[in-house]
Length: 319
Image (cartoon, rainbow, N blue to C red; front, side):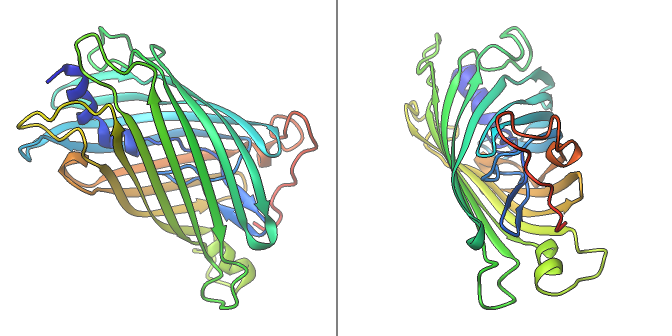
């Protein structure tokens, strides 16, 4: 099997775990946090620094594979209240078993929230992102970045249940994301392939922040917390390559699920998650994700935190 395909399989779970993280979204009375496995559906002026990921891969025989830890970042800038541009990277990865390290490619994204209904806490948005090849570590590095670019159309949705008649249901919310990644190079020089990949995920959230503000008060220790359960999955759907005995199938779906917890402050968010691999191809044991997300639209609402071509969005007084 080629080194390109072997490296791709070994890193599959880490790439799932290091999905883009940026922006908290406010729709009506609902705050959608910047979740860790999928992006939230809105656009804002924010800086995610750092993003943290840890996961151990598994070999096809069940033994421990590469153990990867990465630190990344992402910056989003609003052009209008509904249109945002972002730049970021999965950052630097340290790998053990075997030892390797390297920088990931730079990623850019344009995202547009084309439908929002504040009364029903409902939002739909779409984006196109580009991972730019050869902007990370060179091919001579122990952990090189992809030498080709990848274009990814994305679709997002979010719905809070603040309009429900039952009080117990109102703090709940759901978000979802579907991506389709298309490498600009289908076949590498060594004959290995770069598949088109469908990635999809969702989160189920229970906002104690919402409950405290709009249902009934909770103890101070909990009133800024949003616990959630989320997952992210990837399935190769085209140009998968041949099945090789003794190796993971190139058609296999990989993914992680797990509980997460978000603290929403006035100017920042802290999120942590335990990521549980769904199968052997996804990982060897439970990993971890974390993010510190700085709300530039609340830190500096009249300068760097406002859209370029419209009035600033009011900070969330209901925090």
